[in-house]
Length: 237
Image (cartoon, rainbow, N blue to C red; front, side):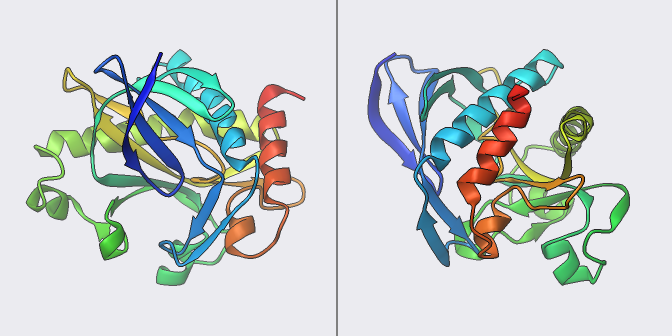
């Protein structure tokens, strides 16, 4: 599969067209950003780790009935996937209170939520990715109708129902995570982007150690070591 011109560059990936109009290639970068791009850095090997972790998790989800854009991993930093029209809604799934949920609502950090919380954020860096309710999504025409919002919530909960026990068996609490979705050429809503420690929070069950991008946000260090541990647990090493 030939990588052609650059289609889009985001904070963590570059997206390239291919010789197949329905397929694109993502290049996972080593760049790190936090706080809407206010904090920036890079760490060698981070992109490859996210690509490998995302590959394994997309395979797991596909095997459990979740349709994704994943086709195959091409090499350490490149993934081949279906071209989609991205829905500009970030779907946030929370099992344990931390981060903005604690800051904004005063819920005790580390409190296990009585039920899984699903939130919508507007995927818009210029506006700081603000919170959305259903009416906002419809007014902004981010979806065509309410049924699509219902499907985003339903798919997000299904992903959580698969990943949460999966990681618990590997000694990790899946605290919260962000999902993105898009529509393929047939108009089907499918899971896209990546699933990695860049957009998931993992806490070690025994020690509570943070094994995700909070290590960068909070200046804890050891980011790639933590990401590698997550990959090794996924691979059963």
